[in-house]
Image (cartoon, rainbow, N blue to C red):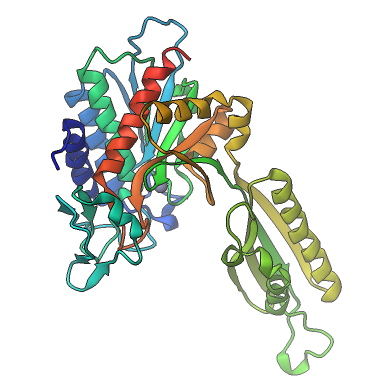
Length: 417
Ligand SMILES: [Zn+2]
């Protein structure tokens, strides 16, 4: 099947970007921004392409690892909406993400795909492969992830930026492009220069597959529970020892198993004890809570605090403190206030005959931070990636091309919204 110039451009860019090692490092979030040097290498490359190749004049590189490019509008409507598009340069550390050797399958033949020496990407596990007969796919060599999360999003945004800057007949309002770092370790937006962001609406391009639009993400909080016990010699401990390890495990056991990540899906929120450590004298447990409704999240936070009190009653002498940190909020709250941000996506999808589906993301996005800080809608668009954070990750070029075309149509429609 012959490919469009846009698809060729997206493919070239994608292969160039995934070859750069950009795994972020959760151990360095308090000491280094971005946490790894490879992320800066990709950000500098993007800065260079935006300025030298695309000729965009307003491009800034924040030393904490954020590139912002602003393309002036060229439409006649002086009140035209300004749209921002955002993607992150880092890749997850759940599996090896450096040393990526992407392989392009020029024309997929509806068969299982051998990745490297021994692993297979099977149709049984990936029935969506069959949607791409004769199309271009990109796969791994079976030893690393691919990096489509979120370099597929970056390639789509850059492909779109090339169209906008090379074809003055495309009418659009002001467009802002944000490339962030350290999304996978939840701290990239801590350093985002929000004062530079002037968009009306923002969209992240960090969703899965082809056509899903994430219209909601979780509200999220972390509860750091610290238990102080009382230590004595074990041989003389009767009636005196208060074992912080025992109390910590009792608290974890008291969390409702029916509300755990392994027992919930769709709109159900959960509790998840993520880390437990300690000694007889002092122990700590981190309990993450998630819910699409803020009231549901707050109920779970209160429950953790109540359980802590209950444990103090059950284990007299134990002292338990709970420190709660809100991590991010459901961006749907801002979409509710300005639903046209979603209408624009629906209208663009209809105009292009794309069967968009509206979905929930059981996690957060950089857009959740943007929505929270700027009080603007920040929906998450699909990026054309499958099996993220896995050596079985793959990306479909037609899905990436559709992503760029959807954003292009959104920009065109936004000139008269
Ligand atoms: Zn991502």
